[in-house]
Amino acid sequence: MQENIHVPGGVKQTDSRSLGVLAHEIKSPISTVIQLLYAAELLLQGPGTEEALSLIRRAIKRAESALALARGMLDCTRIDQTRVSSAPDTVTPSEDLPNLLESHTQNAAGKGITIICDLQATDCVLTIQPFAWQIVVNNLVTNAIRYSKRNQGPQRVWVRTYLESDMFILEVRDEGIGMTQSDQQKVFEHFFRAVEAKEQTISGSGFGLAMVKMILDEIGGDIRCRSEYGIGTTFQVTIPVSQPSGARE
Image 1 (cartoon, rainbow, N blue to C red):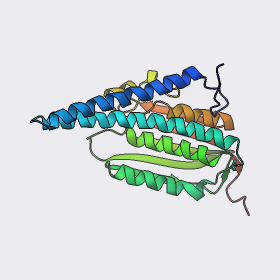
Image 2 (image 1 turned 60 degrees about the horizontal axis):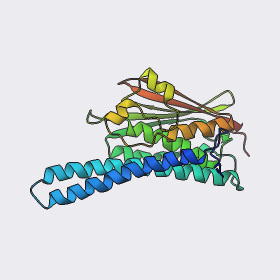
Image 3 (image 1 turned 60 degrees about the vertical axis):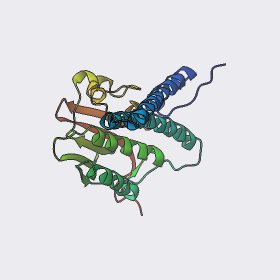
């Protein structure tokens, strides 16, 4: 009998075939990593040190891709667990957003990327579970860092929050590789990765943005993408507000 496993977002449940695809996607890069490392080991025993280092770097990239997929699967599982638990259904951004961004700021600085924050209206209360909120923030900021241009001088990522009517807006903008119009139409599909990202062997699961969209669909929020190829990308998230700024005692 085929079992259905619930995923967040009010969309169709993931069946065993989908999980098979996930397993295959993880198995493939791990197998490649093992083969590359074996080849590197042999080369390091002789004069081919530079070629060995190249293979090791390729192995690291493939391992990062596998890790991203595994994290995506774990996130889905953890979201499912929080939905049947007594976890709170609201978040106050001012209580954790600065800490979330601080960890990304340190990571970005090591890659020559500056994160510029303009955080407004963060003392409002949002209708979203804490772990789901963290997934939304972490995916958007991680992607902005990941897809920034390489070896082209200092890069910047902007994170902005504000209120619009009864919605909390989170915008994350980068100066990265951008996307074509065709890629933008598919960016929220499961396992989709832009052609440019594949060509540059940028690690990623192709699952994070689809999960973010599922989360937001379930709570009555939204996510939109604006991008210009070679210039950069902006993701705008809207989340319902249960209590506006200054409403709490």
